Image (cartoon, helix red, strand yellow):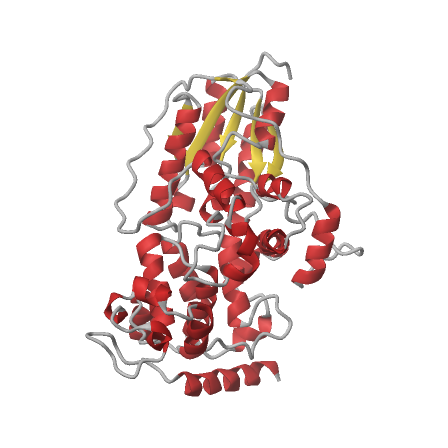
Length: 448
């Protein structure tokens, strides 16, 4: 390959130009690079309007960074990537590796199609600090428990950020390109898209909230989380950038954030080794778990009308912002699975439809963790009490009052344990103590 022959950089979950390992590798092979994005119906169809709207916003920002030279096509990647490469006489197509089940199948198909035209397929880096599948036990087996994975992941380490940017190469003028579609109308208030927005959010977090992150990340009534999850999902910022900025930082908040980043990488690693867990129970014993079939109960949960203030606040935050606080995600998930006895995949599908940060590995395996069928060794007895969770993590009731306007007249923590139901706010749809016992009995039958 000569540096005179152009190459293609196919963007996927890496919508940025800074710290971009695949861009750096492309620049070593050619000074002429075509930026390509493929609108793939196989990925667009399962995603909801908030995720699609945010994605189009990210594409607009990327296109601006490229001086309007992002080539956008729609269709089967195995056909469209080959077409784009052939149009400019490309010697290679460069990508950040996609480690998800669909992405691996798609990329194998595209690489095969390119090879038929003598066009190289080059994978460099991934969406993770450590590419899934890279961290294993000494015997080569994958880790099934987080803590030893975290130790091995930390010991292995990761590369320094790639020194890249928009001026690294000469961007090829697209021979033909679709216009970036107008984002679908959504009622949710979405975060500002793009790489610059991601870096601003990250630097703002470093300037303040990181000091109290370890304690405040569990408090939905405070602005104590990073709010980086949408940007990590779309690759507006790479976790390696974050970890580099945290290097040598031994504050409790920094240590806690490194652990949270590793959770994301652990779930991606589990999905790499067990791709079927995107749809099926990690623990096969749970295939025999009895579930209820109650569409009305599911609808009330989706709409935030359960009569449990912490649950309803979370579900309404999801609809209002395309995002939900992580602690509350666990509470609402536990309520669906262990109070309403509905299968985890119904909730996971609803989340993926509405979350801007909807990520297959993190979403599905966190749901399985809460449901008890995931990687945790002894999870079945963990049943979140939605009332006490509210009292502990939203002690003044500010989070509930923000998202459940019917309860704004109720002062303090009394909002979690209502003596009276103001206005149209519903009675609890189930009795938590009773449903907890039902869940324990059902778990007992499959774990004994």
